[in-house]
Amino acid sequence: MAQLTVPFFRPSFDEEEKRAVCDVIDSGWLTTGKVTHDFEREFASFTGARHALAVNSNTSGMILAMEACGVKPGKAVITTPYTFVSTAASALHLGGDVFFADIEKNSYSIDPDSIEKILKEDKEDNNHKICAIVPVHIAGNLCNMEAITKLAEKYSTPDNKIYVIEDCAHSFPSRTKNGMAGTLGDVGVFSFYATKTITTGEGGMITTKDDALADRMTKMRLHGMNRDAWDRYTSDKASWQYDIIAPGFKSNLPDVLSAIGRVQLKKADLFYQKRLKTVEFYNKSFKNEDYLTLPPDGEGNAWHLYLIQINPDKLNCTRDQFAKALQDEGIGISMHFITIYNFSYWAKRYPQYNAKTLPNAESHYQNTITLPLWPDMSPEMAQKVVDTVKKIGHNQHVR
View 1 (cartoon, rainbow, N blue to C red):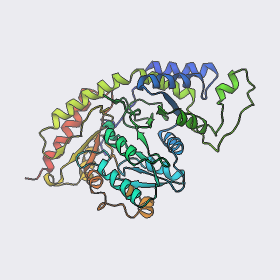
View 2: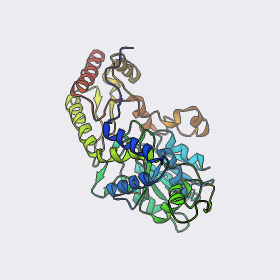
View 3: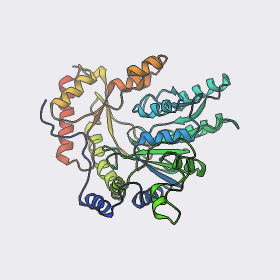
């Protein structure tokens, strides 16, 4: 393989992040404390959320959110197969079940019509099994949240509220006329993984306007304790006096990572503007290439990822061959996503979901490549990506 000349992603750090981490180390308090609480307040203010709860990963946040929304044995969520596996696996960790809805034909977003079909069947069977819908804002382009929240309201009953939990791992900062991603449903869960739009290395944030959900998730993220370590060791009340209200989890974010997050949060809009310049260059460069379909774009798109689809009827190669050629030319690429039902565990557990039952998800999976997109990409790097894609496309074009 050729030397990698354009990395798929590289985090954007400078001396400010380093100083913030050193300040935490010098303070002597490394775990969840004042810095994390400040990060939560600042994130809530940025997004317009009533509550923001820092966690050690999006996955942990998903588990906490689903648990608070009633996912347990006998209950289920509806989500998309076109996402990272943790979205669906979170329900299984709680003993719940999963229904997969197809995505839209011309986007990567979960299809509201497919969601409603599942909700109707659940209602007709009088199961009331579904307690949450989990839309995923793939690549930063938002799902049809107005339609999804209306469906949740329509099919909720006095005995079974259907919550909407937004998987916002890709959608920060996504602004719409109705508010930011993460505030459009009942709960939003963000990721600060190394490749995300802002990063703490590992980490995440939960947002909600619901006081009861916030209280439950706050307690459950730290062993079910009703007091965290910062409260126990800085208040006048004895540090060893606390209660356990449930068998909770260990999901808190330490101050040493929150310090990075606070700095990154201040740069979030700058990072977005930098990514947008590269996106605009990609779009302009690829718009007349008939062997490519450009990414969908809608209100609030955070442009976390740049997903292109190859049009197989225009090429003499497969998606995998195209991707391998890009790598051989030194372009770092990825695939978002391998559809969940294609993994062996999920295929065995849910054989009803496959390429025939979820045709849109399968088509996107088979034909999509993710190109490099990160704030500090140089114009020369972006040009290298464009030139390489065009070189392969023209060489493989059907004559």
